Image (cartoon, rainbow over all chains, first blue to last red):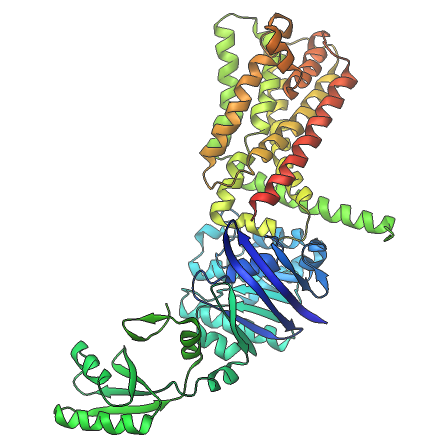
Amino acid sequence: MEAIEVSHLVKQFGTLTAINDISFSVAAGETFGFLGPNGAGKTTTIRMLTGISPPTSGTATIFGHDIVRETVAARQSMGIVSETSNVYTDLTGWQNMMLAAQLYRIGRSERDRNATELLKRFELYERRDTKAHGYSKGMRRRLTIAMGLVNSPRLLFLDEPTSGLDVESNLIIREMISDLIKEGVTVFLTTHNIEEANILCERVAIIDKGHIAAIDAPERLKKTIQSVQSVEVAFLDGTSPERLDELRLLPMVNGARKEGDKFKLFTENPTEVIEGVMAYAQTHHTRVISITTLGPSLEDVFVKLTGLQRGGGISAID
Amino acid sequence: MPSISLSGIEDRLSRELVAAWAIAKKDVLIYYLRPGVIVGGVLFPLFMFLAFTAGKLATPVALVPGLIGITTLFSASSIEPVSVPIERRMATFDRLLAAPVSLNALVLGESLSGLLYSLLIAVVVFVAALIILMTPITNIFLIVLGILFSSLCFATLGTLFAAYPTENPGDIISMVNVVRFPLIFISGVFIPIATLPAVAQMIAYVSPLTYANDLIQGGYNGKMTFHPIVDVAMLIVFIVIFQLIANYLYKRFSD
């Protein structure tokens, strides 16, 4: 049985069609990434799949339970971690866990055991009796995820789990997601961090303006745009804006952007671009200190499919 | 036609009650001491009582039943108009909307916290009146019924208004007050219904405070306009109507 089965789902708000006839399925135990720019329909889709917002038409089932007609049964097997760290800041970490467990009607001994285990796993146990308003942003995020796992869900909705977090929280959360995947939990992950999706997800769907633009394994998606290869180059004397403009004019360069202390030049012919860069260095009396060729990234796929452009060339997403 | 087993119903009911109680307990821990709740739920009825007493419209003893009536009205309906918009702002309300419980349990849980708050305040007023004013009591059972049913009724009313999709408690409190204030004057709390203009008397019959006040007045001085069963039945009807409307509104506005 599929963990999620979505068929011709449509969501309209007045005259605006936020989600336009999307269909996909997620297998039990699969890690599925749901990517898209802001306003593409990611959160609206999650709100429909979790039964908060009814679809205008179409159906969605969670482990065979229709989310509209069997909402309670469908929700019982899922954990939800929303984009906002929605913990009760006036309650302690422990009280938050207890509330989340009681909403799932978990018995006292089991909820004590689960809460203790999860708070330890997320390194919050020592602070369990502190009110959450005394927690850092990362700690609140970890508590939010711990609350989403308190019912030992078979399916976990993770909405931007690591957005804007410190390195420690990021690592703890990524490690937890990897553990859940090993334990066979189905993970539905929405993220702006495309590299995160690339590492964690077996398949990703790219949604844009309410439509699914592509759905496949990250590596297969990358193969569809082999033409978007790139050359990453660093010069001894830095990365001036004038140099970026000059590099864009080199033969076979389709686009360029500055990335830290390097330039990334997009091309279908890396060999010719490398030759061009070396010649450019010689005529401009500078030295190339590193040069690397790169295949297309999942981000490149995303940019190509969603048509995101910034600064006149192929560009990163926010 | 699918068969519905008794154990299935029991299981569902138990699940709903556990969740409703968890929601109520959360409100007790977080919101009972919020300034907006104390001003609206405790101080306002007290000032109203003092104003009527100072105006010598009646003796303090005669005003006690009315004080208990408006205390239940204001305290029971003061929690959710504060808690729900704050929870929308903090996105914690989504947590409740996404929980594996029905909207009935969510609305009931929210109303339960208003009910408990109102009972607490009403008991304090009742005991204080008994000790300080030595208020005579004719039938304590009627007073208990009046406090209990009116508290649940007005708590559900507060939950209903809190369905309005705003993140600002002031928006909802303003709307609730548009209903609460007129109710005081048309429900026989301080001014007998019989002395009101004919139109106001008609409106009094569709005010839940009329029936709550009738029970409480009956408990204190034995004078009642309706039979106690009518009062209780009417309050139950109002509770059911408010609950159904609240369910509908939360569903509609959760989109």
